[in-house]
Image (cartoon, rainbow, N blue to C red; front, top):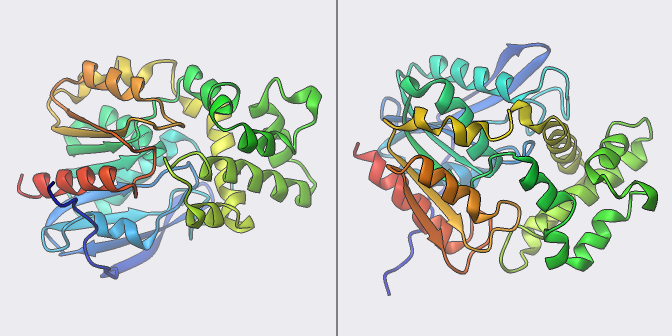
Length: 317
């Protein structure tokens, strides 16, 4: 059996800073790799997940010049967990500001989970600025996807975890978990807000990998992280990410000239495979890699192997 590819060695940014993007928001960004090499931008998941040091290691540092940033309201960006002026299209504009800051005419766009949603929205608006797309755990933000994860579907696969997810919500309000959590996450009771945020965040942590990963669960149970993660996810999903139903699949024709790779775990719970498959059908020039024995997380070995293969392949483009 061939050896699975793994992360490049740990690397520190050669530049970092805070960019004022207006509306009271300042976003943290960092650049890694070789200045002037192939430009790329990394879009993290969530919304609200923030970047981590290991994300830098998905690219060959000798051949890439990578921009990573914490999206509005999370990570080191400020204000923490802020919902005002925080929409998909604000983030798309932020990506363009960062491209200009990097001095790149076009760049490879890499996004997983919510990052794939954002990558598709950006590439469909700015195809001329997108040299390639690498997508993992495709999410199109349809009502069916939201219902599957937050109302009925994954609940059948993870009953104990679902029970914990339901716990903060009064029984009478469980018919609309999204609305019930919005009330808790935007309410005045700070204690209830943090408790709800942790429950929301841990539900995701416990359902994204094929096998349990205590490290992911511990990170998501941290109150500071969970508050931004839960508030932003709930805010975006309540508003269906400011996308029309089916928009990202409908407009996939705009990607026709962009080389792409789609990597998706067979047993991805948050993001069912059918949507990655539908995207591949609508954008047939993109390669689809279905990873057997994998869930949703980018760190699962088979998924990571194909992500590194994709960035290696496009490094020479």
